[in-house]
Amino acid sequence: MARILLVDDEPRMLSLMNSLLKAEGYDVMSVQDGNKARDLLNTEIFDLMISDIRMTPINGMELLKISRGVRPTMPVIILTAFGSVETAIEAMKLGTFDYVTKPFKMDELLITIQRALEYSRALSENLELKEELVGRYKFENIVAESPAMRHVCEMIKRVAPADTTVLITGESGTGKELVAKAIHAYSRRKDKRFLAVNCAALPEALLESEMFGHMKGSFTGASANKEGLFETASGGTLFLDEISSMPIGIQGKLLRVLQEKEIRRVGGNDDISIDVRVIAATNTSLESLIQQGKFREDLYYRLSVIPIEIKPLRDRQDDILPLVYHILRHETPEGKDLPKLLPETKDMLERYTWPGNVRELENAVKHAITFSVEGKITPDVLPPRILNQIQPLAKPNASTDPASDPYRNKSLKSFLREREREYLEQVLSLSKGDKEQAAKSLKISLATLYRKLPGAPE
Ligand SMILES: Nc1ncnc2c1ncn2[C@@H]1O[C@H](COP(=O)(O)OP(=O)(O)OP(=O)(O)O)[C@@H](O)[C@H]1O
Ligand SMILES: [Mg+2]
Image (tube, rainbow, N blue to C red; front, side, top):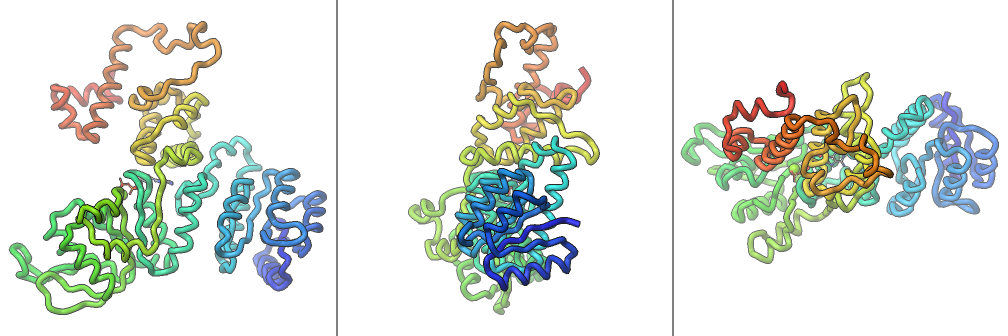
């Protein structure tokens, strides 16, 4: 039975949590006084501590520091008042497992407790796992170790329950869609649909009928009535991706929909009321589009009731390795060992600038897995564009030790072949994986390209 130390100076809260946790079968020791908690931490062993943050004379932060000293692997859950996220983030930096904002639902706390206990179990079963668990702060599969990304998770938790429109901004590949899905998953709409439409992918007329639906005969090809995404997503969430590309004519219609909560199908006369939450995303600044007269200012204000900005990966280095492990775990079949990341490789991954953000990182890790030898991810199996930008740090004696030379004992044929593959990878990535286009620009046949690609026989 897991043993929990519960600390809160509010007696009613303390006794309520005490009885609920006992009812769940936990062995609970609850104390109101921080001094007493400190003594207990020094003399007894607990599997988990749950502590309020604002207490006198010893507050939760101090208890957390004490616990790090005596039992560094014991997970700690911090209870914090709604709105004091900054303190919670400070606590996370000191190694708190998670925090729960008051007032909270008991279910939420119970789930966090379960996760914390699972985490500490895994940790004590195998300390080797420690490295893989760097990405322990996970939220709907969102890796968030950096303060910037934790803030995004906090925003998700806060805005999800409301029905407000959210505008997510961030460079390509930063995780905008992932965040939109998490908001949906944490909202009361979670059992209804999450539908997405890419505003850049369709010409104006099609986009309009896709969003609002149309009536039979309203345009050539409209052979039957069709409901639009706003109707189909009823009760759920509609994700308007690349909203910056939405033609100005549709922007006006969307604004009306957001204000009136009604749509009218193309060619229709009836107003149909709808209940849909709208989340929009953009990777270009809407402000500058407004100045150029390409985006309606009034729509911008409607959409950005709650703005969430996702920083580029290069500005949140703390997320890089946890993301790498997250992807490695995802790509490794169950029961198999994770490939091992060599320190030089980690260093290069952390120093690269990731213009394509997390999506580029995903591709790089998959590439590295494909080329890894004996389960080791060495720097030379990273994609060429990373190798071209980042020089591995010189290892001690590297220049004097001939064994460290990657080209030693290589035949000219295998050297050329390696270089050829790197070049092919580069061309393929420029053509976004389109092999036909790549073959054309290389002036070779598609069959030859296939033969030369990784996986083909030597
Ligand atoms: N913090 C994160 N944790 C785990 N996976 C992430 C994270 N951020 C992004 N990803 C993954 O990276 C990939 C790209 O994310 P997503 O498609 O959400 O980005 P995007 O901002 O919508 O990109 P684009 O602008 O190109 O459409 C996805 O596979 C997503 O799961
Ligand atoms: Mg996207």
